[in-house]
Length: 224
Image (cartoon, helix red, strand yellow):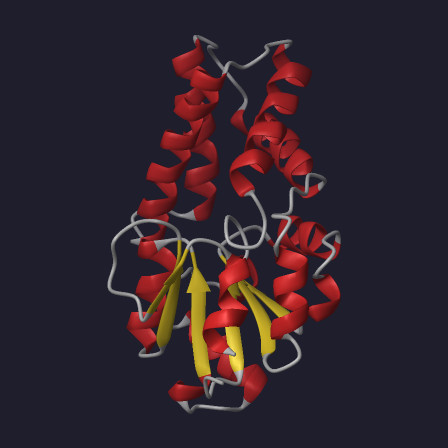
């Protein structure tokens, strides 16, 4: 068995299907506020806009408040909806996100097995009340020891300062005891490299992570 003590697990698109969560919440918002049914192409357009600004946030080029404003402004303009109150749109959207949970079916069993040997922590860039609400609604929540959220810490992955909050919790500065697991090369894997711990990439892209798996169900087999 690998000599880790703590598994630092990304949440969205690692343990839960955020792509589908986002689609549901976005469609509910634009149906509610604008009586507008979104097509798959329009949802993909929002995904691209949102991803661009999250990557800028990771590079500290925009703030979280700026991200929330400009993503909805840009998307609404793409739809031809003018003079949108982005604050109202974001509040409705975030409320829908907080109440939408789409788990990957393999996450429960994987967390159950892993929790027998490791301490499981969630590490996520996101809004605190949304992430708490969604995590607490998952089937695997009982196996998670704690959650570390960028909103509460004050810094986003991949900044190495994110790790400071984790070390304050564990009291353990031995980097060999940690493994970062996630689907984002620019957030999760880079975070692991920035702090000098092993990494496990979840997905099908080429990368130089220490481990590569297609989904979380493979992690217990690799580690145990």
